[in-house]
Image 1 (cartoon, rainbow, N blue to C red):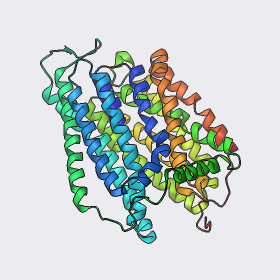
Image 2: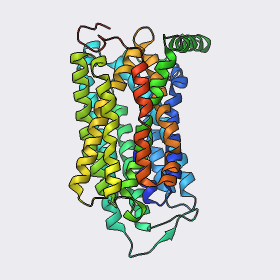
Image 3: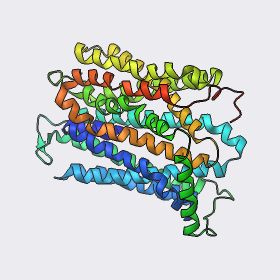
Image 4: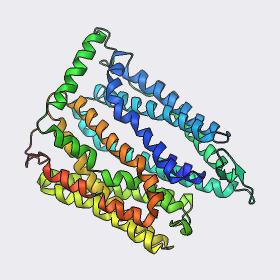
Length: 416
C-alpha cells in the first residue's frame, strides 16, 4: 500500500484518487477474522503459506503487466486487491504456523528476531525498492517524450517502465520464496487440517468468540480508542509521499523517487523502529498507564513538522530528513501504546482470536480516514491540510483519557 501511493503519484494520478483507492486495500485486514476459520479447517498452515506466496507473486506480476495498458489504473488496482487478500491470508497462516512450529520458549526467543526482520522488510519494501524504482526512472527516462496511458493521465514512458520492472523484480522474488519454502519450511506435527471439526462446530465457536469480545466491559470506549487513536495519522500517512514528490508550485518539496525512498522508507523506518523499542522498554519498566499520555503526545505532536515543511518548503535534504525522522520516531514511540493496549484488551480466553479482531478494527481506523484525506488535501492545499491534521489529533487525546486500563499492566510483576 505504501509503495502503491508513491507509484500512482509518479504515474500522474490525483491525490483524491490515490488516497481513496489505496485506502480500500486495507479492507482485507479489516475482515480477515471472518475467513480465518477456513485457514484452520482446510489443509495445513504450511500449504497456505506456500500457496499465498505464489498468489502474491502472481499479483505483483499482474501489476507489472497492467501498468502499460490503456486502463492501467483499474487493472493494476484489481491486481493489488488480489495481493491484499493473499497477504492477509498469509498473515493468518504465518501467525498460526509460528505458534505450531515453535515451542513456547522458542516463540519467546524468536519474537525479537521476527520483529527485526519485519522492520528490515519494511526498509526493503518502502525504502530500497522505491529507491531502485527512482534509479530506473532516471536511467529509462525518455528525452521529453510523454505518453497518455489512460483516462487522460500523462506520464513519461520511462517512469512507467521503471515501475513495471520494479514489480517484475518483486514478483520474481516471491516466486523464489514460494519454491524455497516449499522445500525448507519444517512440517510441525500439529500442523494438520481440522478434519474432525464440522463447519457447524467451527461456526458456533467463531460466533461465541466474536460475542465474547463484544461483551467486554466498556467495549464502546475500547472500540473508540481502536478507531480514533490514529485518526490524524491515518490521514497524514496517505499524503506524506505525494507532498514530498509534488512540485513547489503545487505546495510540495519536489523530491525525486529515490530521495523519498530513503527519507521515508529507510531513515524513517529506522527511526520508527527505535521509537517503538524505546516505547516498549519504558512501558515494560513503569507500566503502560504511566507513559500513556506521553505516548499520545509523541504520536501526534511531531506531525507539526509537516506544517513547518509545507510553509517553509526547504530544499535542504538534511532538514527534510531530520524532520521526517523526528516524526517517525514519535510515531514509533506512540504506536507502542496502541500495540500494548490491543494485548491488554485481548487478555483472557480466546486471546489469539480477540487480538485478530483488534487488528481488524485497527485496519478500519486507518482505512476510513484515509479514504477522504486526498480529497480534503486537494480542497485545502498542503499547508492547511497539515493544520487540519493537527486539529484531527484531538479525538486521540479524548479517547485515551477515557479508556479502561489497569495501572500495573505492562510491568514485569504483571503476570497476565
